Image (cartoon, rainbow, N blue to C red):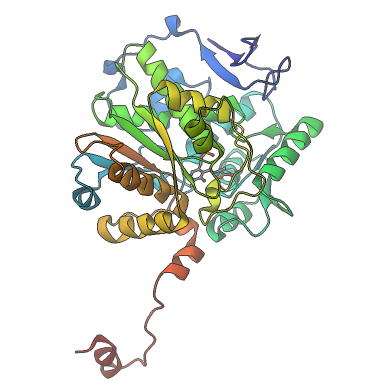
Length: 401
Ligand code: F0G
């Protein structure tokens, strides 16, 4: 049993009402369960990690639209750890999901919910990954998908996915925040189901990242989870999920939720640093990490609460720091992530150097998307392949043998 509840005014709404914010006060909505009715223990949660392992805490009744999402690997980043004096620093590589990003966790739940609610089409605005994921799950479900993208600011792999899986791809002359405003209006006007992270049902799927992290460590809660933050849905979702597990007695504490944003696109970090109640939107966000190039994150209020209540923090990293961390992960650990994802590790390195993160902390950085999402940035950063004639001599020459 569950319903929708406004986080600002507390108004409750039936679970099948098609709303994305509170009709009374426009506050953000949460899916709230009757926790006294959920009998879930550690013993019920044996077996391999996956999104649908945690069905008891997900708002879908029937068979979900699934491509076997979740169950992503956790790696101890020993080599980077050694450089920064840490033994217990890990990466949870969400790039290993079916479409190559963590968005699949939200979309398996969100698209399943769309069908359950009888919706006939789905849409989103996106910096790329949300659109790729919605395209994939819409195709799986057999319903039409419309995606709005900021022109010229979406990484190649993501556009390719949205196109190939058969979505209607609309490139707008504006940024992500403009696209989100437009798609929200369009969805309400035309009865299309909105699957951005303002949709509380989509966030329910994303909270399973947190479930999997504590499950992986046998319910020993890490000290800190570090995330790249854009529209601020993911940090919010993970925090909510872990609170639910605490309510159910499955875990005993909450990790410090730590948000990393790119310097040119950092409204959440600024609000945390100034102690402001809400963010000041940035009109012209800019960063090489296009996935998190967002100036007006819709879930800001939820995210500020998650960071503050968990005793976490927020920090910026420069584009150079992001690209350096991306390269370090690739070269020193064999882990291929896209720039936005590397922001989490860049943040870990920076916060460790600042002394904010202690050497003995257990930290999990969520790397949200795969290296192949953004091949153009990679090609720009790396040396060109050595072009030679097809002879042994030519190879010997370039190798200096
Ligand atoms: N990392 C990657 C790779 C992303 O694609 C996103 C968001 C984030 C981090 C930030 O997550 O928005 O929940 O704070 N991408 C969205 C999109 C906005 O449209 O694909 P968030």
